Amino acid sequence: MTYSASSQPNQGFWETEILDMLFPRSPAPSFSSQDGELVRQFGFVPGLKEILMVRQVHALEHATVWVLSNLTRSPRNSPMSWFGATTSTPADDELLGGMSTERGFYLYGEVDPEDLSRAVQTALRRLTSGEWELAVHPRCGTNLSVGMVLTTSLTLGAAFLLPRGPIEQILGIGAAALTAAYLTPELGLWAQRYITTAIPFNLAIANISSMRDPQDRPAHFVEVRWVE
Image 1 (cartoon, rainbow, N blue to C red):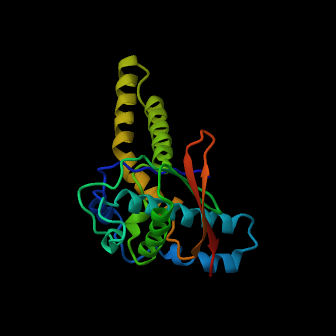
Image 2 (tube, rainbow, N blue to C red):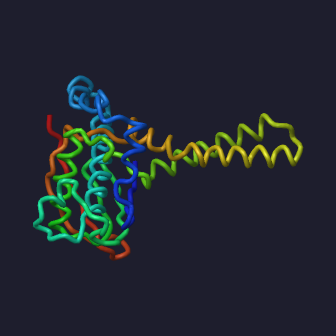
Image 3 (cartoon, one colour):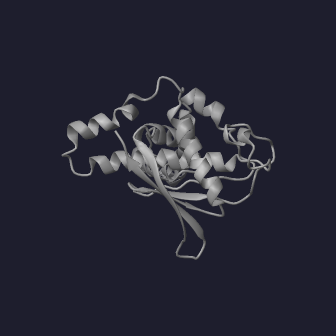
């Protein structure tokens, strides 16, 4: 499966309050900490470990993007910039994109390798310490998928249930589209929280390498390994 995430320069953590209301930090979702046990008990199931790894990698990808997008122009050796202390001035205004796999995640955009290395470690620590909201991102591809499914379902349902007159059909389809647009952000976050991501209790950073994408743009691959 493929996922993506992005950040904008002035975004910050404004989503945190909404996410805390929707998805309280504690207790942690029980399935997250049980991934290792699932592998031990059902490791014979084809693809199970890979699916569980993608979910954990996906969360780490999002958290890394959050950490990078909230770096400030303060000196890089300032420890506070790596522990959630930020100012209103972003470190850079580059758009970041990511794609998760069972081996790790790709990060696309101009990122200093040293910053990325520290951001990944910080993201892993903060996620496993209870900052569950970092696992979800409002620009994740999951939200787009949820929006497409919801819009299609509601539109088809309205077209099937309402009278066949053109006015009724147009009004019904319009109402369905508006409803889908209203519900998608919340349902997308819910889907990320409980389906497409998991707290990376079983991941360790193995390697970070720099590369170029097919369009010759800078990219990095954060390789992870599974630990019990």
